[in-house]
Length: 67
Image (cartoon, rainbow, N blue to C red; front, side):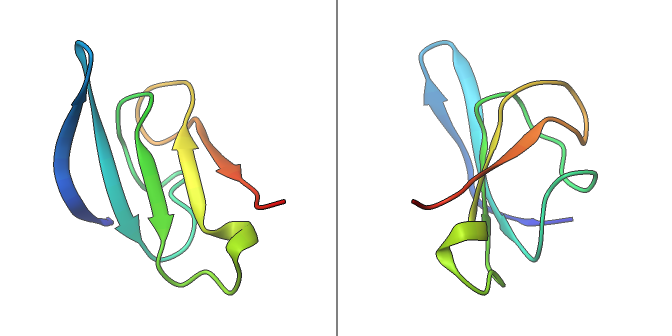
């Protein structure tokens, strides 16, 4: 399980979370849609930031690749 960096921030009426951890959150971290996850052990910027775009539970995370 990842460590919560901030417990939560409010975005309108939806509470979203910011997490940090090691590796991908897919299949590991549960969060509401709109939450973000920072991979603390990323080897480069291309695999650092994930956003929970859909689903419930441990799935629905998408990697936002740097351009």
